[in-house]
Every structure is written in C-alpha cells, then in structure tokens.
Amino acid sequence: SRLYNGGSMISSRFPALRVLSRGLAKKAAGKDAKGGAAKKGAAPPSAESLTVVRGINFMKSGEDPPILPDGEYPPWLWELTKPAMAYPDARKRYESGEEMDKMELKAFFTLRRKMDIKIQNLELAKQ
Image 1: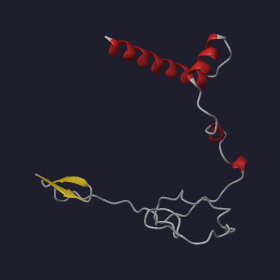
Image 2: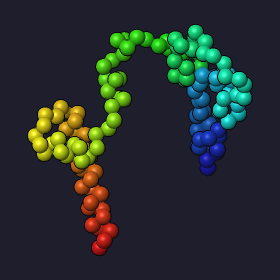
Image 3: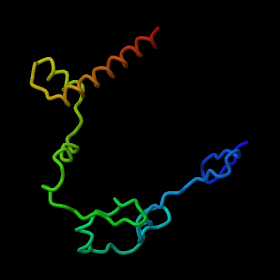
Image 4: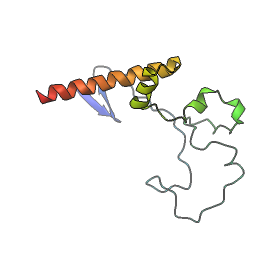
C-alpha cells in the first residue's frame, strides 16, 4: 500500500524513506496573500534595490546577488535577448546561400523538421 505524505507518494514498505523539503528563501515582504504588491503607496526605489537582483535567490541561507557591470557577464547572455529565428526567414537565408553559423544552422534544421512533421500530420488528418 502507499501512503500520501506532503505531496508525494511514499511506499509503506520503506518507512525510513522520508521526503525532504528544500530550504527555500522566505517570501519577499510587502506582498499580499496572492503574491501581488501590498496596497501601499508606491515607495521610491532604495539604493539597495538598485544594486541587488531581487528574487533570484532561492536558497534559505543565501543572499540576493549584486548587479554587476555588463562586462562581467558572459557574452552568450546578451544573445538571449535576440528574437528567435522564424522558419520563413531562416529558409530564405539558407536557400540564398547566406553565411550561417553553426547555431543558426541547427535552429534552421530544427524548424524545418518541425514544419515537415506539421505538414505530414495535416496530410494524414485529411485521409
């Protein structure tokens, strides 16, 4: 038989097996029960809030990390803000012979494979 304990199933054959909870950081002060901001007047940002990344810490004993200068972050981080490549644009670039790096080629072939699967599924649905 199985026992329900704190959101997970535990086998009664192994009573020594315990579900360990992670020590998560405390909830930020100033929030209501639903997670929204408390109904207080908008306070101006403090000097600490401009130097620390709030909400990133998930460890109970940890602290929020400081905001670093742009040069301190790895170059790939700034690539995350670029929009994803759309299939028609990628197809035009590939068919025109335009130079594409390894990651762009991988993205193109992934998009092409997905498009082929969608077309095949539409054809199968018509039958």
